[in-house]
Image (cartoon, rainbow, N blue to C red; front, side, top):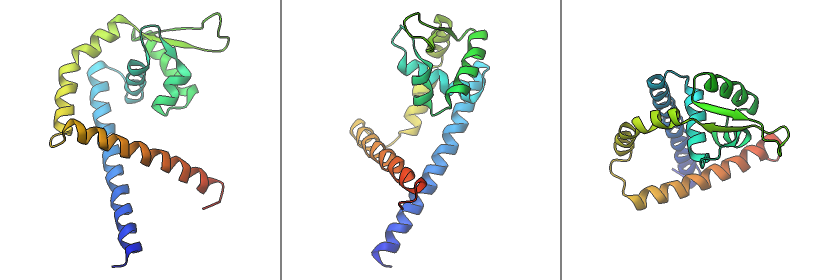
Length: 160
């Protein structure tokens, strides 16, 4: 097999592994969401908020960017999550047109309650990896994501 064909095979295998991982992560998100009585996209929004919210809230735009969910859909879902008592929404007086969202203490408590299960899941998923291997994997995946965004942009404007 020629080098080009070997690379094509390796890239194809990588792509199918990513498809599999994506499918598994969706199933995991659905399971967490079910435990809280919310939808999978709402779970993803809460997870983005829990990473971004330092106690003072975060912008809904930052949540949309982090979760890769359209801002209008995030706005709709945060309204629902507010009704369910998971977060509060407010428009700061100094940030016209901006929406800040904050996890409620009840939501934080529910997430803490899932903490042991989440840690057990992480241990299962990362079995055979040490901390250094996980850091290295994340570094490589970040580079792959960056390069994929660039490749996607080039493809969309026709320069590939």
